[in-house]
Length: 639
Ligand code: IDC
Image (cartoon, rainbow, N blue to C red):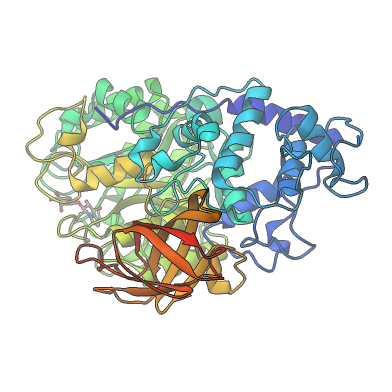
C-alpha cells in the first residue's frame, strides 16, 4: 500500500529527558494567557502554549508572542539551547556579528560548538537573519542526531508538488521532518525556501518535542483535571479514534487484526464499542444480551492488547430518553464496571444521544444514578455523559454540571455537513466555562450519517478540537452503504484494509489520523496577514490575488543577473475566481527569458501575467502554484 506506511516517531523520550534536565538553566515558563496577540481560537494557540509552558519560546516582549514575525537565527539558537538544558557554556568570540551580552550570545556559542547551527562561509553568523523551512528542518535534524535521537523516520518528499525544490543539503533533514510529522506542509507544499514565522516555529518545535501519542502503556489511567482529559502524569492527552457501527449489526470488525491495523497503521488510540439499546437487535429490545456483552468483552480485550483506550457505549437513539431503560443501564454498567474496575484503558459512555426534547435535568438525574452504580465498583474510570438534542447542548450541562464525582466528561456530537459555526460556538462557550468535553461521535457527512461530505467543515472542526486538545471518535467502522462508513460497501475484508478499500470518509480519516492532512492540517494557515502584522518579505498583492514569490535559482548572464522565480497565488476574495491577472513590479527594467503556466507580458519594470485556461479557477482562499518565470535584470521584485 503506497501511502500506508508506518511513521516512526523521533526519539521523543530522549528529548523529554533533556527538557527535564533543563531545570538548572535559565528556562522560564511563560503562560500563553499573558500574550495579547495569541488567542484560544488561533490555529497556533496550542503549540504556542506548549512551547511557552516549557519555557522554550518566551515572547518578543512581556505581552506579545509575535506569531507573525519571522523567526531569526539568534532566536532559534536560543530555543535549541534551552531545549538542550542550557549547559554551562560560556560566551566565546567566534563571530564578529555576535557580541557578548546579547540574549543569543551564549546560545550561539553553544549551537556552534555543538555543531547544531553553523555560521556563514564569510565567517559571520547573522543572528538577525531569517530562517527558511528547510534550514529549520536541518537544524532540528542536527540537534536530533547530536543527542542520539531516532532520526530514522523518512517521508517521501516527492509526494509534494514542490518536493524536488528542496535544496541538496537539506534533503535528508526535510524527509526526516516530513516522515516524523514535524513538517506537514504549507498549503499542500513543503515550501522549503519559505520563511518561518514564530507561530510556525512554535508548531514545528511542539511537534518535535511532542510526547508520544496517548496510549494506555504511555499515558496510563486517564482522569479529568481543569476541564481536560489527562494522562496519569497529569499532562493533557487527546484521544483520536473510531467507533464501531452497531455491534449487533457489524460484529465482524471486532477482531484483533482489525484493531491492530487501526492502531499501528492508522494511529488510532481509542475504539468505541457502540451497542444500540433499542433498535433491532438492541440490548433492551430483541438483542441477545449475552452475545452483545461477549462482543464488548472481546473488544475491550483486543483494545488492551493493541494498547488502545476503549469506550463502552450505551447507544440510546430511538429510545430518546435514557430513563426509558434506566434499570437495564444500571444493571449493565454494574456488571461492566465490576469487570473492568482495574483496567486503566476502559471508559464508560452512559447514554449516546438523548433527543426529542429530553432535557438536561432528566439526563442529569439518570447520569447521577448510573454514575453512582459505576463508582461503586470503579472509583475513577472516566465516564462520558450525553447531552440534550443528540448530544449537542453541552452549554446546558455547562451551566449545571454534575457534582460530587470526579472524572466526568460531557459529549458533543457533530456531523460536519450539518453542524457548523453554531455548534462550534456552543462547544467553545462550554469549554470556556471549564466543562470537560469529549467528542465521542462525529461524521464528516450530514447528520443522517449519509449525504455529501463537507471536508472544509470537517477540517475546521478538527482544527478547533486540536487547538483545544479535545478527543474525538469518528463514526463508523463498517462497510454499510452510507457515507459515514469508512469502508466501501464493496469491501468485505474485516482487516488488512488497503487504500482502495476506503470510502471518502475513510480516506479523510486515515489522512487526518496519520498527519497526512496536508491542505489544512498544515504548518501554517496564513492567518497572520489578517492582523496586518505580516513581515513576510516576499509577498505582494495584486487585486484579490496575494502573490508569494520565491527565487529558485539565480545566475549571471552577459553581466546581468538572471533569476528564476516561482509563484504561489492565493485568492484572498471570498468567492472563487475564474481567471486572474497580476502585475509584478521590479526595481528596474526586465527582459523575460521564459515563463510557464501563465501568459506573460513585460512592460518596462512590470511583468504582467494572466491565467491559462486550466489554472484560472481558484476557489476562495485557495491557491494556484507551479507558476514561474525566468527574468534577466530587474534587481528583484518590489515587495
Ligand atoms: C446511524 C447509522 C445507520 C443506522 C442508524 C440507526 O449510521 O446505519 O441505520 O444509525 O438509526 C447519530 C447516532 C448514530 C447514527 C448516526 C448517523 O449516534 O447511531 O448512526 N448519527 O445517523 N447521531 C447523529 C448521527
